[in-house]
Image 1 (cartoon, helix red, strand yellow):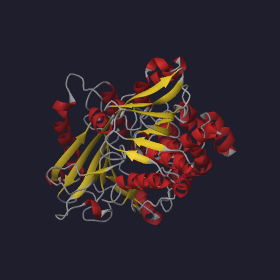
Image 2 (tube, helix red, strand yellow; image 1 turned 90 degrees about the vertical axis):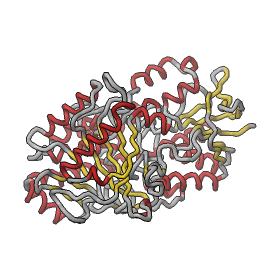
Image 3 (cartoon, one colour; image 1 turned 135 degrees about the horizontal axis):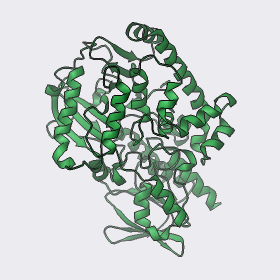
Image 4 (cartoon, one colour; image 1 turned 180 degrees about the vertical axis):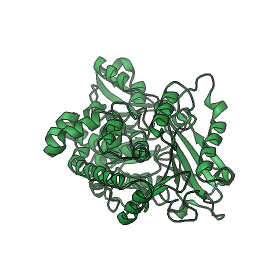
Length: 512
């Protein structure tokens, strides 16, 4: 059978690309290896002991999808703002519970930290908001270099700051704001700079990942990440609906085993069942390393292979999906005062928090399981009760940075459950009795992320976000008719959709 376009993978970027290409009048077939669309953006029921509790097992929140893209797609995504959105608990009576109430934020900063920390917090967010505004148009365009982007799009007063942020470390960037207490910049680094990355406090490029995660521009979000009603699978189900309405076909349980080409031109794809589909254009939503495997390394140009080799990193993220029988009770803030709604940041306490973070990074990079890795804790059901069940059980997750892909002297098969219990014991320090609330767990270390979602090396961003803009793989390959719309492309790994849009625009431009 023949199509104008075959798209490999029904992840969110593949679905976005399918929508725009089908709207342009091309016949489009999307081939997905799994039995559901969505890639790592899905809602599942992974708990054997609580089969009706829903969980966003891959991506947890929506934050970075450009509102202009949502409008252009014509889809409606039911987002829920988390207010408050950050909770930093202490082991004593100190905490930060940050939301839209700035008077309350100031009170907490002054009571528990210092007025200087509050002013640093304000200055940080003001600067990020300005850079976010300037950079926003570039996300739906073919990327320039970081330096060219700065010169063309950033206001003059921020150009050098932007380049230093994207090329440098998050530690260097945050040190400019003169926080009195290291716990606060550590909180921001954990959720934005370390998320899904090999980069640590001092790693060049960790500032790039930090900036990416501060590009939240969703309507009504005011720079924050939002919960999607029904879990993240709602996003991709809406995108799949848009693609089908545009005329694209989506075929599930159809693994592609090869992207075929002849004399430097793509000819179609081969499927696991032995069938083939002919197409003049193939757009791969698979990560760039899997795409290369499907194509054959020897069919790509030397420069392409060298770039991919430089970009390759193993995943360093552990996801411990949890079903809880009740909400945890925090030592520093008992009761239910909104602290369960936002991202809960569990960080080492004391004077040496940054050294503790650096040590956790060193341990993971050397193949060890850190005694206290950085942890973001989510509890989705207080914000979205639709994920709960008749017993009122809660959908929760520990999002852990960093862990090794391979454990020195052991394996994840041997260590996963014990390490998850160790992480829960850290939760117990802040919220005593949390371990006793765990009804079931669904644990995804990097090799399991690789197997479950089909992402090479279990790297949730496909290409590490320490690489940005034109440093990432391009949308068009050297093989005529072969394109990439992976999250490994510009602008970044996350649930954005811009790569799908931009790849589709590149295809249409080349077809003119």
